[in-house]
Structure formats: structure tokens, C-alpha cells
Image 1 (cartoon, rainbow, N blue to C red):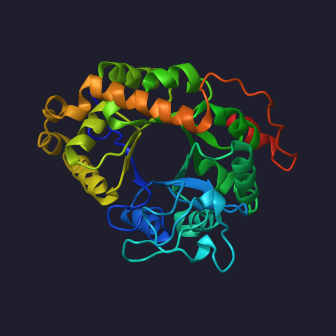
Image 2: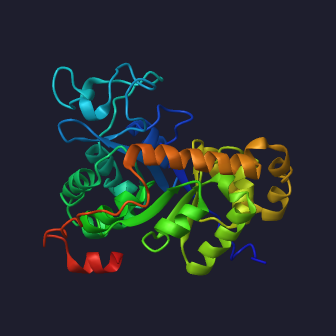
Length: 325
């Protein structure tokens, strides 16, 4: 059993920033998560019609903004551009670009913060990753100060080859809710796995946790907002908790550091048996539904890529590429 001095508690990753308090996927939300003390932020990417990488969750603008339309069909620049769109949620915010988010992360006071980029399956992988490489490599000393902090979150195996070719210096992570999918399609090529909390409550999920530990693979769990769920993730020994409420986890983590046994004893595990969403048939149904949706968007998981993307240009430092292999 770990002692108080040796116990390592999970990192805090702000899901779309501090999205419970601020408009999701905005600079204000990212800044709040960092200000609270998060070690990482998580956000999503899409590409506009004029090749601007945009931090946004949905493929379309309606749910969270005062505008409409699919991002891939809208230009960023111009009188009608997405640059003028604002969030519905107060305080109203502009949608940030990937470039603006990198600028935030490269501020001297933020160079410790990691960045989990959720790559939405609606994207064209070669196009997206080429644009991302151009923006990442534009920063001074990006190989040392920026690239090691970026984690590419991949839902669909179609994106793995392009990620390895276009952004080989970035660590890769699976995102989803199926340990079986990880084992079949992502285990070899990913450094970490970002798995839905419910999927890890099953017997197979518990086996998967042990497999990750044995193989030295990182394990993040999402989206964990309730303290009793956070405590359960601590018991599992995950590496990171992705949450809409970073301060809730950071405050609980501080209490656990002060007195692990007293704080931990306040949170029981009965919810695992009383919450229908954690029942194995429900977990399996959600996993199957996600799989079908992903294949409808990006094609069958088993489809072979016909063309292997060319290697990155020689401007990428060989040492960086080698260290990411």
C-alpha cells in the first residue's frame, strides 16, 4: 500500500477548460482551468473552409453560439466569418483558434500546461495534421517547449497513420469507451488512452486498467464531475482526471494530500451498483452506439488506408521524431 509520501494522485485536465463555469472551448475557459491549477486542458478541433483550425466541439455552431452552419462550410475570415461568432453562454466569448490556444500555452507562466487535442472524426486527417504542424512549428524552440506537451486524442483508427506521419513528435491517445477497441486498433500506436468513466467500471474495464499499468501506458478518464467518481478514479490509479469542474477535483486532491484516509473514507462506492449507466449492458450499448456513429462518419474501422502519407519535411528535428517513436 502506498504511503502518504509516495502516493501519486491523478493530474487535473480541464474538459473544454473550466467549462462548467465558463463558455466551453474558449480562451476564458482555458485560462480559468489553468488559473485554478490544472496540469492540462482538453479541447476539440475542426477546420474552417479557409483552413483555420478552430477550437470547437460540435461540427456545427448552433448549440453553443449565436450563429449557425457547419464549421467546414464556413470561412473564418470576412464579414460573415466565424471570427465574429460569439457564445450564447455568458460571459460571451469568441471562438478561439488553435493558433491562439498555442499562444496561450506558450506564455512563460503556462509552459507547464499540457494540451489534449480531441481530434473530431469529421476532420480530414492529412489536412488537419498538416495545418497543425505548420502552426506548432512556427513557435521558437517548439521541439522542446511545445511539442512534448501536446497529446493527440484519436477516436478512429483512420487517423493513426496520418498522426504518425504529420505529427510524429506528438504523443497519441485513443479516446472512447471500449477497451476492446483499444486492444485491437490503438494499443501499439498510442502512448495513452482516454476512456469514458463508465467503461472502466466493468470487469473488463478493471482488467484494462491493470493492463495499462503493466505496459506503462497512460490512462485518462472522462468526464468526471462528481467527487465520489473522482475518488473512485483515484482508487483505480489513473494518471489523469478530465473534468468540467477542475476546482472540485483540485480541492479534493488537496484534501487527499493532507489526509488521504480521512478524506477517502467520506466517499463510498455504492453508486457503482445503484447507477444504471454503470450496468454492463448499458455500458456495452453505449460502446456499440459510439462505434456505429464513428463508422458512419469516418468509415469502417477495418478499412485499410490505401495511401501512406509522406514523411514530414526535413525541417523537423530528427531527435524529436526519434524521441516520439
